[in-house]
Image (cartoon, rainbow, N blue to C red; front, side, top):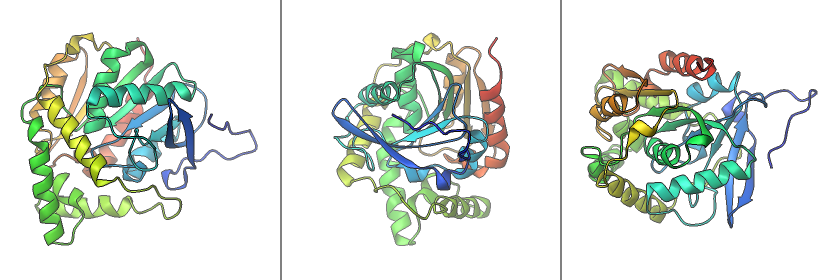
Length: 291
């Protein structure tokens, strides 16, 4: 179980200093980090393709952790979590539920990005009572146009990054104009702010299985997203090459009452490029009393 701070212990609100923890559930040891004040409904972060605990932008996490209990975790078979990566998004969602319930929570807010947003959708459709609010960024619905092409885009950009000795995320998440290149380098630098107790990198087989799951998601029958009645915030850049930006608009149309923000001149990592604008929007959305 997670450790509750006493009144004598300072509340950690810096992701770079968030303690690394583990919990066993369903035969799997899940690695996670938590920060922010305890009490209330926690915000659980669902991470992207190939990502581990070290891939969350502190400029997004820290503002939310100022007033919310934040939990980030490695899904089964990723980073320091044990077991094998499932080959379907729906199975990933089931494991996320196992992790959340092992921590003792029966209600959470979800903040998700990319593959994490697909997992979040599958979770909320199957377990609606578990989720209070939903943040979907850089993601798309099951059966979404061109999601099944993510693998091709990913491998192409990984090759381009190798040839220029860059981080693949600079190509995958950001435009290749002057603004995008600058934003990409700044983002990658922020991911290095945590210098101790870093996570294990994802294994190649786990990464390939995630890609297979995304392709399956892209080719599957569209889910009935009208079932999602939770307050939902959707955001993306206007030039997402990984999960096309039109899919964020598709989610917005299909999830009644959802809010949509599209950032100009930005790609898959639009929320990271515009973190100074997006973080306050996310904070306000999560703090807003429900009608």
